[in-house]
Length: 277
Image (cartoon, rainbow, N blue to C red; front, side, top):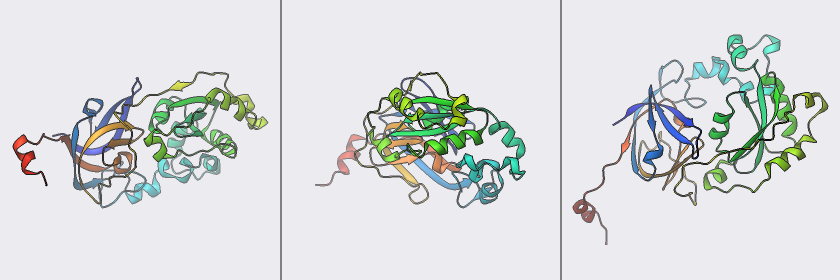
């Protein structure tokens, strides 16, 4: 039975997307498990994904409180890039900023549930789009820093959503949107200062996800409250394992140590004994 600390989902960008569950240094191929009943047991142990400190709860999907308050990747400017304060000399980690923020970023349009605008580091776009469960995506502009990309995203968010409705995304309730037409319409709202960064590329990237069916109602599993999951896996999309009974946000429980395996089938004679008339 594979066991280890949840580290999230890894992807290979095929049709459909190929998922692997990251447990410590091990990656488990998940697509072949779709249709199987999985047994996931939270052992009660939680460790910070950065410093490995044993903790009772996590902050920002896997961090202990000190790492949450001290690491640059947990600063508010990560979710609000237009509020980057690197130029004020108050960045938590200038080396981190040089590696991840002072580098080219895309501002893009994507369709996960409805049309949204977002940003991502250049070279990271496929992972970003897949993490969001995007069905389609197209880069709109390439900017030299995360802050500039955040400023453009902030301006465009006045005209188009910058959030995904994750419940609609998981249900497969995706608005029918002509992404190229939407791109042309949103270009009219790009401030003049950002027009030199616009891209001519009109390639629409499309994604398919491994799903047997979409859930009718969205319920969520919480390993902290109910440490045992035994349910049939019917799909994977974004950061979610989709089961018949509920969904599990793998990223939310990063740092949780779990045992995971395909549940053994119940022998016919035992199944008969469990019947209730």
